Length: 576
Image: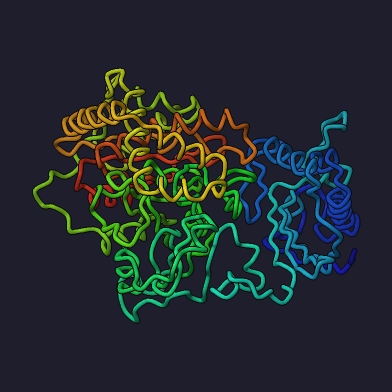
């Protein structure tokens, strides 16, 4: 461990003291601060969880952040650290090459440590340390009153660069554009370039980058649909899918082809062949699927736009889980030509972004012009039966957010006890049977001809799809007509429905299968109405639940896509 410490004083009072006679440049004061840092470093390397808990400031406002997201509160940080410790997570051997200490007064300092790891990688560790009272003093004296401060970490951020990459093996993936250190991103990207396909020199999306879900045709590249067997049989596309071509013509660059759940038949974002794309909003949680790769790429800052598809929530759920803006357009508003289908009468081409302005910019390129005959947004509608599908904390967060949303949009709110008249389970079955029938029509023959190539969850889903009966299909079509009529009446005159985008925050990757199935069913019951009725939905990445991302969905009448995007922009500008 290096002892090269560089000390800077910033914004001190004239006497450089805390008002208690302890100057910032007091050698004992500085020695105490340095000792606290090195104690933290020893505890970190030794996985001394009790010492780490003690050295982090107690309370709900303490922060710890890295590339995977932000942890808020001492309890959440401690829980993460202990879970990581059981998996052998502490850092390996490393050296603190230089420690920069910037004092903002005797009670607050910023430490930045330059780290060199044994594997050749480098990193920075930035910490805000604060002086706190020593509870062990019987007289209750404060730091500096007859003794040196007791230092605790109020905020910490860790960043790092990977080690130098070994020479890349000559693999098919590398031949298509994935090389060197990029192999670590195989769960996000199937093919990546710099860019993979350059956009036009001019256009409204110039300099923006797109992660394209591996269902879209990209000229010169194969489409893999999230399955190696499918990829092996695919031929390079002769031309771009129209949605891809439109983005390129508008000046956007295709950064790469991003992973998807197998044949887009999932909402989780986990893929047994390629892994689970990271969700940077919280450690160890799923990104949501099936537009998981594009969502992860955008959330990680690797692309500006994620081009995906949404059948039963495959844009909306990743947007909710990853803290992104997202849109499922009116069914048929964006051409799905050149896209591997799942259930064509439900499938839509959607996209995800980190900000509302970019979401609307993409809409201006891909969507048809707004219909001037449609009424503008006039009111927000909250239906208690739909909100109740979410877990209690998420439902409460939505209830708390609606008044702020109404104020931001200057729209009245109408609340009704039910919109489904007790038929929510019928809606869910109608969607599952209708989607399943079409999925089997699209891919049943291929699945039957390739036994054993699908992951167990996807294989079970296709088995269920093949078993849909004629009676179930007829019932599904009748219920679908009823759902369309229900929303035709409820969303007339400019009414916008507000619902949770998913039933809760992103669940853990290792959540038990039965619990995961219950969450999926609850979320599908929430999201299926838009698919059944062909409705546009825009997801806003607020509020939050226990510090975790959840999405708020605005559902409009068919054709109101541009109006919903405008509402999202207004809400984002006003939201605090």
